[in-house]
Image: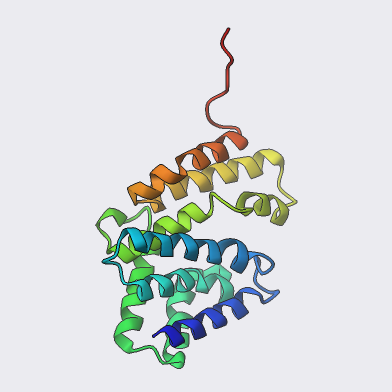
Length: 197
């Protein structure tokens, strides 16, 4: 299993670094590796979680973005199934991983609180990863045609959605709460500091 996962990570890394992929210059190092680090740390907190499934989901959940950005959810299922089968994953593992990705992709339309622990871990790690690293600065860089107000509104919307829909584990909420508030403050929303006499 480990060899198969490593082969898939290599395939995703190659796809993510393709210049046709919008985020090719930063996605592996400043998103997927951060998601992985948070997810593996959460596996220590939740030892019942299947680490192999968690690791596979980390690298699978955004695969469709790299191969067909406009139809990313469908592409993850279609091209993900093909790639996993070609590498040699067992059909049962492929089916489970793709079913779990569908749950992750349905955030906001389903109840992630009732999802399997592997889904909760990857969804929470994915949402938390957007609160660290250069994620919001990269959004400015990739959207120079947008006004500062549009960028800030987009950042607030993204941070809010991640916080309310994707981050479902209480430990992650607790650990990342100040980062979330900071992102909101940086983008024109949140408490204004007032000094008392």
